[in-house]
Amino acid sequence: MIHKLKTINPYFTAVWKGHKTFEIRKNDRNFAINDILYLLEFEPFPNNDGGLYHRGIKCMITYILDNPTYLQSGYVGLGVVVLDRFECGEIGSILTNLEVIELKKDKPTEVSP
Image (cartoon, rainbow, N blue to C red; front, side, top):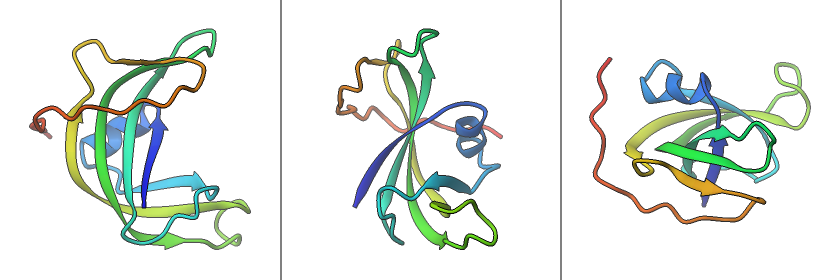
């Protein structure tokens, strides 16, 4: 299954640079090992009426921690491996009123440490 997830900074940048290899998410999507995540760098507008997408990361779930002893009930820890990184456009794709958009993948982006 494929999941598109808004991700704000500094959490997005930590995955982009390879420093963070996990996501903590509400388990409202029935995540499973080998699912694909598209983490979308999201910059919300100040009035919370949409925002901009700047970059994206394609990841695969490799591990799921689902234990209320370690995480708040209803949340999971997802171990992820990055498969690809991409730009969402020079300006970013605008999302308002929770419209669903399809991202057009450009060429992969080189990452420097």
